[in-house]
Image 1 (cartoon, helix red, strand yellow):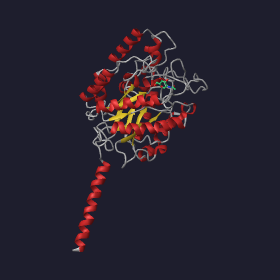
Image 2 (tube, rainbow, N blue to C red):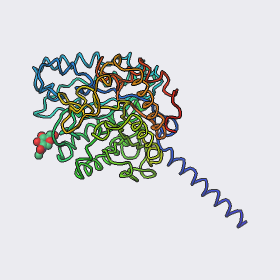
Image 3 (cartoon, helix red, strand yellow):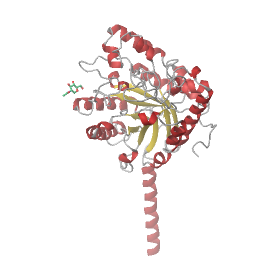
Image 4 (cartoon, protein in one colour):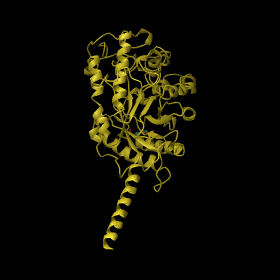
Length: 426
Ligand SMILES: *[C@@H]1O[C@H](CO)[C@@H](O)[C@H](O)[C@H]1NC(C)=O
């Protein structure tokens, strides 16, 4: 009798343990089977947040060299001119046909950058609104074509990194040091979480802030850590504290090694969190000086940290480009490290035939792009997968970055799992 009692007790506790384990492993039902299916996708860069290098003609067409980002685009032109150019850009740069083509290319995700000013323009801020209907259209189009859409807040008030792609290029970011800026950002994340909390089959994830500038010091990192905690609450509990949402929170590593974030927002206490890391090998003199084989080796070397990190890890931005030659990539009017025209850099090689129109690329360069693309996708799938920057550029601009141009010119396969160089990483 006593023995029976003990084995029943034991079985009871084992069952409880298994149920708890199942709950802990699978506490939410995201709209995509993260953890078992690889993320393969593209960013929709330069659409709802302008970037000079993605659409250089929008900037060149202003005839004003002081227009270097979306802030100055709105500030230094008559408002009606800026408004109509933006409206035309939003209407034409992406259409449903792009979403159909992205799905046809075998991809399952799009990541859509949007700026805070789509939701909230403060006093003294020149930004022009009108992006939200396009966010809604993008969600509809993603749903129509079976794509998952990650909403990515790419620019916060004060700028979280000072980059032109945050909307406002500034010498030092002001987001983290100003509680009004942070409060405004939290309010937008609440709004986004509410907008999509019942449509997680199409919008499975929100990335509450792109690339906060952790390299600018501990004050940025401290504000970022607190903002991730606040975003966890806002995104995971939009129905109130007693009910979890099915929306994944995708935090960014703030340019720190993944190990910096060990144990941060991890299970079992926290559920439904993924890590986004961006991998570029072009934004330093030593990076652009690497050989083609060096670039491939550096990509392959990322596999073990991606595979072993304690949160699902997605490489949410990367590129097969191995130079910073794309016009305006380092900012409008600023040159490239690769050809020594960037301040403080020295000549590695000519940018001719390395960037611009794909029709100018040699077959050996396209073979390298294919090898580098395969090395990266093979490696990033050792983590949870990848989202390339970016689906398209304006025709002729930085096409080595364009997934669409890669498909058309053969350095990206029509099926993202097919390989010409399956052993590129050894
Ligand atoms: C903080 O940011 C807000 C805009 O979000 C701005 O109005 C305010 O002047 C800033 N405060 C300081 C001290 O810079």
